[in-house]
Length: 313
Ligand code: IPD
Image 1 (cartoon, rainbow, N blue to C red):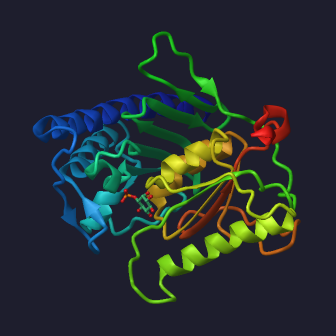
Image 2 (tube, rainbow, N blue to C red; image 1 turned 120 degrees about the horizontal axis):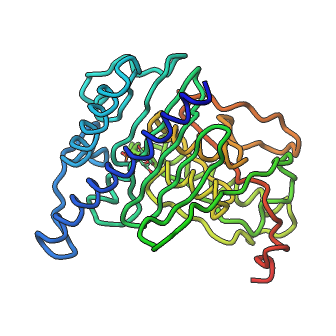
């Protein structure tokens, strides 16, 4: 019910705040120990770039326990529990499920690059209904609840009010829209050195997509920027606020995207599991399915580039 969902939302917001504080305390401790270079302590999981720190594990345990205490019947899917084999039934189904990445951007955290966050989603009937993303180093707290809007709050600004993210119906992607946009793309963790590896495929198709879109618009090379932050969930929050126009990644897990999807959809943005549409301006857009590995997100329609003055830059 509406009331139940609102109550879960309040709980999730508090959880996001507490977990963000834990992340920040841990980051400060690491900085304090050796100056700004910090200690790069971590353990490798699947390969040399798939990393976990004590912080990932502590924050996940904290969130998992808090949820189990308050909502014992809800299912929990978390990145670290899954890695340890404690949660092999990680698949998202119709049950009320929490999907959590305690530390998205683990590599960033290890290197003390500020783009890291805790990402918490509440999902029901396979739909992400609540999303919380707290990036404590950046003082950015994103939150959304189905039917209540999506917001960005800056916790350390005195009297700061939550800023609503855009909510507009998005038109089909016109063939020439994305020139002068900022793309974001992540590289995931596949480092196999063969032409058909994930990384190679991604670099190639990402660059092709940017070139293709540029040439279709008759303004090849006019893409304003290409970014790669190292946190898929934050990418989605930035698409939701319109800072990024497009984000694309192959190889994500549910916990990398669930909260970001909730926030993006509530802001009126679009996410699909399809490959980038090839040439048809009106190619059908598939509805997003959790459990896919490839995602493409497009920002809410919002005001046009001309209206915001971005065109002239
Ligand atoms: C990773 C980050 C990264 C993305 C990977 C994710 P983690 O999550 O979101 O940007 O490229 O696919 O697994 O390991 O930092 O929680």
